[in-house]
Structure formats: C-alpha cells, structure tokens
Image 1 (cartoon, rainbow, N blue to C red):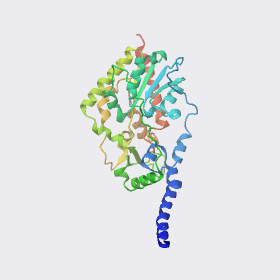
Image 2 (image 1 turned 180 degrees about the vertical axis):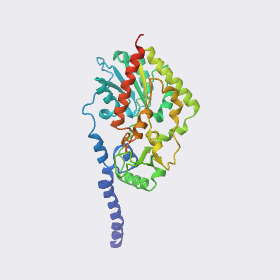
Image 3 (image 1 turned 45 degrees about the horizontal axis):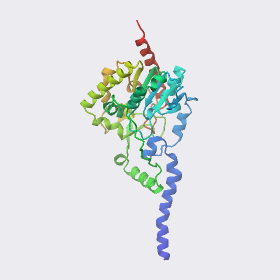
Image 4 (image 1 turned 90 degrees about the vertical axis):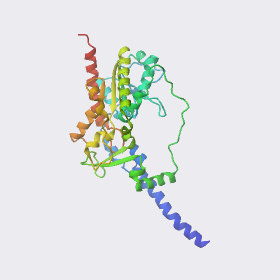
Length: 340
C-alpha cells in the first residue's frame, strides 16, 4: 500500500504542477478571440496599450423594438465588426457626424445575415419610423458572398427562438489538454493559423512579425463564379430596394485579416485571396465600400496594428479610417441626390 501511495503521488505531482502552471501562468495571458481559440498566451499588455487610445464616449445605441420615439439619421447593421462599441467604426463615425448612430444588433445565435435583418426592418417599417436617412450594412469578407446569395427579398424571415444555449465554460482538464494538443500540433489542429511576416506589423516585440488569423479566412477557396454572379445581382437588388424606399444605402465589406496582410507574409503556404478582384467594377460605386482598399495602404505605409495581433478584427486605427471614408461616402451620396 505504501509503494502504491508513493507511485500515485509520483504521478499526481507532475499533473498538479501542469494544472497550476496552466491556471496561474498560461491562462491569464489569453487575450481576445485568437488567444482563447488557439490557446495562445499573447499577454494582456498588448491590448492594454491599444485601449489607452480609445474614444472616451460611446455614441452608438442599440435598436429596441419599443423605441418608438427614437430617431436615427444613420443606422447600421452588421456582424461582429459592427459590435466593437467604443472603438468601433460606428462610434468614430458618430463623432465625425456629431450624431448618435443606431445599431441593429444581431443576436449571438442568430441564423439571419445582417443583410436579411435589415431587409426585415425595412419591410416592417422600422427605418421609416426612425426617420433613417442612411443605412450602412456591414458584412465580413469571408461571409458576404454567402449572405448575398441566400437573401430572401419577398418575405420577412423570423429568427428562430429555439436557440441552443451552450456554455463556453469547459472543464479545467479539457482546457489543459486542448492547450497541450494545440501547443504540439498548432498548425494542423488549431482553427488559428500562423504565418511569418517580413517586418513588425504589430506593436509587440515577441509576436509582432507573425500573422495570426482564423481558418475561416480561407473560405474564399470554396467560392465559384456562379456564387459571385448571384451575389452581384442581389447586391444591386438590395441597393435598389433602399433606393425605392428613399433611404441611402452603403454596403461595407470588412476585409479579412488574412487578405490585408497576405502580401507581407514570408513562406506563406496558403493560397492567395483574389476574391475582391471580382468586384473591381463595383469599386467605382459610392455605395460599395471594400475596406481592403483602405487598410492595405495603411499597412504599406508602416502603420502598425491596423488589425489586432490577437484577434480577427481590426483595431481602433482601422475603425477611424473606415469611419472617415464612410463620412465621405455619405456626403457623396447626398450630392448625388441633389437636384441639378
């Protein structure tokens, strides 16, 4: 019995050591989406340095069904790029326009795209009640083709209320085993991909010359010419729908992180994303805004942290640049509508 106890202690001590090491040294260094998803200890100092530069006031409201007396000159609807609150593009645009912007927020488990949600609100009369003049619909690059291809212009689609609530809290042992597995086979097993960069594009000494992105950024490889053709047709139809309602419409594509940085990678094993080249004919349209055209030049000009090192989303720097361009587009659309 004594030998068994000694052997058991000999086995448990290393396990306890690993558990304590993970809980007190590794997990506290997880930050943002990519840190938690890939179990990568980026550390909190990086995000703390960015947060010091955020705007002090958030001028973005979330739409509520019973907000009948509310008015919103500018309204937005989008995915996670439209939920960045104080450092999001809407907040910078609100400060530039000196107004409060109303955001139609998607529910976390919502199966409807931002494009479909805004069609619903248009058909329900919400935008007219709000006296909305301009609607900005945002979709991330990796999803906008699918979003547009699956639009229903004829019916108001109701979001299913039977959403399954899954706890994001995993048992400690499961988290530790996942961290060990991803640490050993990071490139093959993880949903987070890593590629080296030719310089430091993020303000971090340890990982500033590495690009971390989600594997969904490679979905462009599954898109065919028929998808692109249908997406273009439905985008034009979407624009015409808002034109007929007397509301100015801007379609904002949030560039994939991989696309923005792919030209600055070294020994990149992944295919080149050329998706947006199929939409060059739309670049001349004031209502179509491909943010690759804004963000890639920022990186080329040496601006660090255009996207966040440890996240799939852009930083406050990109939000501000996008807001400035949106402000310009809104004014151009006003000019287009002015009688001559």
